[in-house]
Structures are given as structure tokens and as C-alpha cells.
Length: 626
Image (cartoon, rainbow, N blue to C red; front, side, top):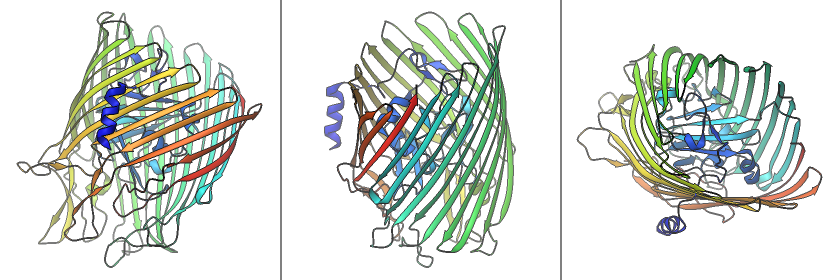
């Protein structure tokens, strides 16, 4: 099946990301100052609000998997652990921003909690691929994802949604914005629940989930060029899942449950004064994760992150210089009941970073961008990262770009200090993981058509891997001596047929291999498909609207830990198809029906854990205002 998709990609020509690229599209995280999409020096995909609404996929992970270079793996049904990898990087190598807040969870191995994120409140999704640590620091090793809620200024809007469907699933959300060009406030609330499926698949009980999220954002512009803002987010989720037998450690139909809470707030100030751009922000994130087996508590972790930063930027003709300073402090707490407090720990660390960026427009044909960042860590060795890019526009509608970038990912608290008493002890001598890589691509856009081709290659060193001492029977972590390599190509493009239809396609070829010990042959990385492809289409005609997507995921490898020694297994490829059909029944009122996994694919992202089959939903949406 993968061969057919490859041939189709090249026969049809490369098709562009979401079909929404134009001169007004802004990419926020491609540089320290936002840049237009046609001037972005690195690969980026933007999903605008129209596409998000047309597809109506409730899970942010299902939307993100439609981007080139992104692979998603879920440990069973929706609500269970969901990991995202960009261009073959590890799950903790993606930096997530939500309304400018660093949203990676310090109490969950620095991973972003994609299983808790829904799309109902989102007005924009941005994915920047490749190492971006020279701009944004740790965790931006594989790439950066930025999620934004509605802009509070510019008008009054209200949206309400209610939905019910398969697996006794229910969904409700509300969003509003009220304001003028000088001030405004916006907010959202969303609720999603389902009885789920039996993820272990042995005829046991269903594993359900429930999430609730809310946000509130306010912006004031007291004078031209000055903006003050404040935003807050709350996410709470409860998920049931099948874990392992406490005696055999094999997969079992258990009554495990996890309860997760994330709260965050950020305030910022911006000013444009005499050609200078000044900004500052202060943010806080707190998280809590509690695990239970039936009615018995097992353990809990919590974390806090306080971040502060300031930036100054000035243009000199076609050149712009930017300097920034950032400070971040993290706290981590772990408590347990099953080990009688043996895993209890209280840890803290901090970092201070200095960032410099020089964007130069040498002519109408050539521009360059160079960034340098130095992170000073309290808990391990400091790191300096570099990014250098070039954009060429040799003719109207054509753009060539090349980029070299470096990335780092700091060790998690688990990596440094362990978790399981007497067995997993951690390693305080760890250093950050490091990546360096390049990409080069060409893009063409003419009227309603756009197409692009990008090649990339990244090398990971000092990878943090698990170790086992057969003499002491202790597990720990270490920086690997070998090098892991990830390389591939991304093909994308789009065709817009007025409002009736927008069709977009992308294909990714990925060759990802790891080498934990120098001099030993590399092996293929797990849970990374060699071939993946996506199709996105949407449109409107009178009262009728529609949106459709298809995500193909090629064969991947995984490890079956139920057996000893644990063998590698191959997970079959699959195709996920979704469709949404809507009809305007009155002013601002739309009735719709949608289907997920329309082809009823039987697949697993993680060996041994089932995923939902075909699901059908129906709902009503009410909209008022622009």
C-alpha cells in the first residue's frame, strides 16, 4: 500500500500543507519576531480556524498528525498516553506553546500532554519542524508546536456546540470574544467524555475518559503600539486504562486510572517605540498527576514552572537585530503509597538563557537569519546552540530555503533522580541530549496552486537511554556513546477551488536509526513509520459545508515486553479516514454529522493496545458574530 501512495504523491505533484498559505499568513515561532509564511526560513505548517472547524476533529493529536513529518502513537483509546514525534525525534523533543505558555509537563518527563488537548477552543495551530533550540531552548530539538485561542480584539463572537455519538461519547463547548480594536476579552470552555473501549481487548471492562478545559484571555491597547495582555488555562482529565499485572509485569486487563490537572497563566507587555520593539512576559504552569488502581492510590507527581523573559528588537533598513533573556525555574514533587514513600522526592532546578538573532535582507532575492543561544543550567552542563538559514526568491512564485539548526533536550527529573526505589536510581551526571541537522527545500505558488519539496537530515548525540546492571540488578540512565540519525523528504501542496473546495496533500519518507553504543550497527527506531501521507479537503456551497481527512501510517516497529527476551515486532500500516457534513438549518445554526475511522481500520500504535473502530457522531453548532 505504501508504494501506491508514494507513486500517487509524485504523480499528482507535491501538494501544500493546509491549502491556506497566502501572503498574510504569519508564522510566529519560525523566528523570535513573527514572519510571513512566504519568508519563513524553515519548514512550517499552519492550520487556520476554518480548517479546524471544517474537520471538527475533537483531539488536537488527530489534527497534528495531518502535518508533514509528524507521527502520533496512542496507548489504546482516546484519553490514554499520546506521544508525538517530529521527523523521528523522541516524544520529549517537541516544545509546546499554548498562547505563548511553555506547556510541556515537568511532572511527566518533560513531554507535552497531547492526550489532554482538544481543538474546540483553538483558532490556530502552527508546527515548525527541525531543531529550533537556538530560538526557544530545551525540548525544541525536534520542532515547535504553537496552539492559540481566539483573539479577543476586533469584534463580538459567540459559538456553542453540542455533540453525541459512538461509545456513549458526549461533547460540549462554548467560545466567546467581545471587544474593540482597543481592548477585548475572550474565553472558552469545553467538555468531552466517552465510555471508550476495552483497550487490552480481552473482553474486560471499557476504558473511558473525561476531560474539561477552560481559558480566559484579555488584551488592552491603551495607546498606539502598546499592548498589555493576560491569559489563563485550565485542563483536567481522568482516563481509565489497562496496565500490567503487579506480579508478572505483563499486560493485563486492570482497573488503572490516572487523573491529570494543568493550570497556567501568562501576562505580557509589548511596545513599539521609535523603531524599537520591546516585550516582556511572565508565566506560570502547575501540573498534578495522580494514579490509582481501582480505589487504591498508587502514586502522584506534581510540578511547577515559573518563566520570565524580555526581548528587544530594532530594524536597521533591511536588517533586524534581536536580543532576549529568559529565566526558568522548575519544581518537582513525587509521592507514593505502594512503596511506602520510597519514591518520595522534592527537586528543583533553574536556567538562564541569552539569545541573539540577526535577520538580514541582502536584496529582493536573498535573506539570511542567524541565531545564537546560550543556556546556563543549574543541574547539568551548559549548552550553546546555533541556527543559520537562507531564503532565495529567484523568480515570482518561487522560494528556495536552506537551514542548519541545533537542538537540546534537558534530562527529565526521572532521568536524573530515578523513580522506582531499589531498581531505577537515575543518574545526576547526565548532560542534555543534542541534535544538529539541516534541511533544504523549494516551494512554488501560483494562484490557487502551491507545491513544495524539502529534504532533511538530523543527528542525535548524547541520547539519554536506559541501562541495566546484571550484577546489581539496578536500572539507570546514561548518555549514549553512539549517534542516532534521522533523514527523509517531505512533499506537500494544495489546490484551492474558490470556496467550493480546498484540497491539500502531504507525504513524508523517514529513515530513522539509532545507535546506542559507538561502533555497533544502527537499528531502526521504534514507532516511526517509514512512509506516511495525509489528505485534507474542505469546502462550502450555499448552506452545505464539508470537511474530510485521510491519514496513512506505514508499518512501524515496536517491542513486545510481554515476552523475554523482548522481541521486536512489526505493527501493520493503516488508513484513518474522517468525514464531516454540515447543513445550515437557520441563521447561525448548523446541524452536522461526522465519522471517525470511517474505513473501520483495525490497528495498534503500541503493541497490545487496541484503538477505536468506526465511530459516528451528530451535533449542533450555533454561531453569532464574525
